[in-house]
Length: 190
Length: 161
Image (tube, rainbow over all chains, first blue to last red; front, top):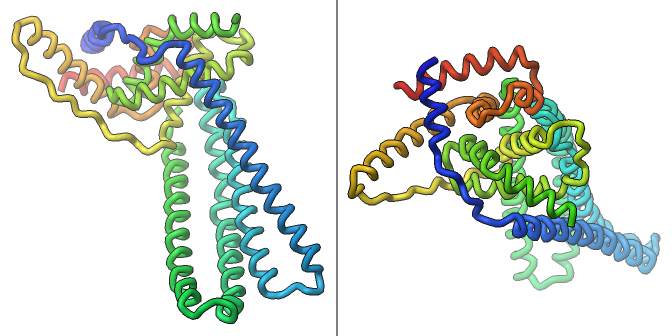
């Protein structure tokens, strides 16, 4: 294995690397990062709580017997949006609880389990949420037609499907990337 | 203050090792290396209070480093930086450049290995003991010995070619 000894020598001949940032700067970055995560967490909780409060107040205000297409369609869309945010937020929290201090083999096993479980979100819950969201939009269309100027109604009618298509493609691309990551991790040799 | 002092000590003694591990893993890509090394030391800072002396501090750091490198897959690969160099003026510069060429070839060969083999051989090159590598990767020392033998052979063949 003479050649490997040469490789070891070559490896050892590398210049000493000076850190691009100091330990103090890393410390500050870590603290800023922790603060950012905390703020994002507070924002998410705030947005979800506010949406629910608005919905509950709206329902009390309208009272149940006055339930019409507008309330129903709008509620479907908002609830689905909130549900999607909650699912992603929960997933992110679950991912962050995976112990980075585990041996690589165990760590990758846990990450693979995490992404395998996410298949339920991708292939079952996301299509249901997406379809229900579109259904909410379709329910609202006759109300838009009745209450909005024809130009604006046509704009919603045309731009809506385009936005849904773009959103669908974006979600599909993200799912594809995650599945690619999972299959790559399955090929890791230990 | 105690945490800061401990972190400073860890950063001073382990930065080069972690940097070289990442640089080797990313086939010499310095941008990705810098980014990942910072991410690793941020994780070390965040988790410093959870270190329980159950393993060596270096094993603990290597585990965080190896797992962070493996999970860099989640991010999209940044473009490789192409550095244009001037022609050498002196003989010493010629030698230096030839050494750099060899290093570049070595990084390319390491990059051709699969992810875990890459990390194993990088720790071998850094002089990390077998027991520590097996604790970091999570395989038995016996399996590791066989793996190292195979990787060395592969790498030697690639560098020779």
